[in-house]
Length: 133
Ligand code: TYD
Image (cartoon, rainbow, N blue to C red; front, side, top):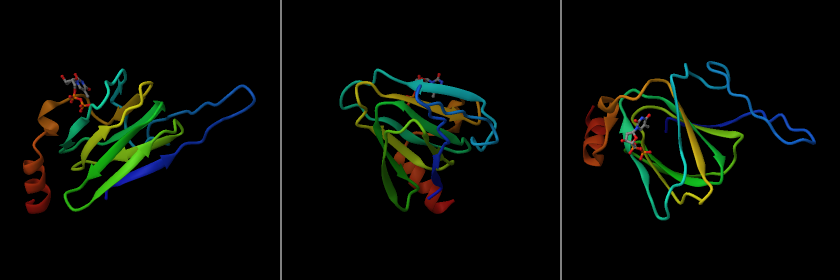
């Protein structure tokens, strides 16, 4: 599946930890947009879409949440709970995020500005597109 867990270098010392993100270095694209999700209510599932072009990298800065990633052929479940780890998600991957801890802050870096036309929000349509071109 076209996803990758990226381990960032954490500059830790006796004061704590620091992670640096640089476009086209440890972030493998031009960063055109950053958004973050927080205060997520109990039992909420977010995402429930795929993108036609967009490439994104998700980092849980605080707390934890689970991802289900689906390319139409297989599904992978992942727990993100490490701010020094990024989840790179290429286009045409259906994603669902759930089990957000109360303190979860999920930050997403994206290679394009927001464009509703880039979304596939219907799962049956997604399966059609990935399985039949
Ligand atoms: P939504 O797509 O429902 O979020 P998720 O996929 O995480 O469940 O987005 C919630 C709202 O925020 C929706 O009205 C669209 C808007 N939005 C923006 O304006 N800009 C953005 O970059 C994103 C991701 C969403």
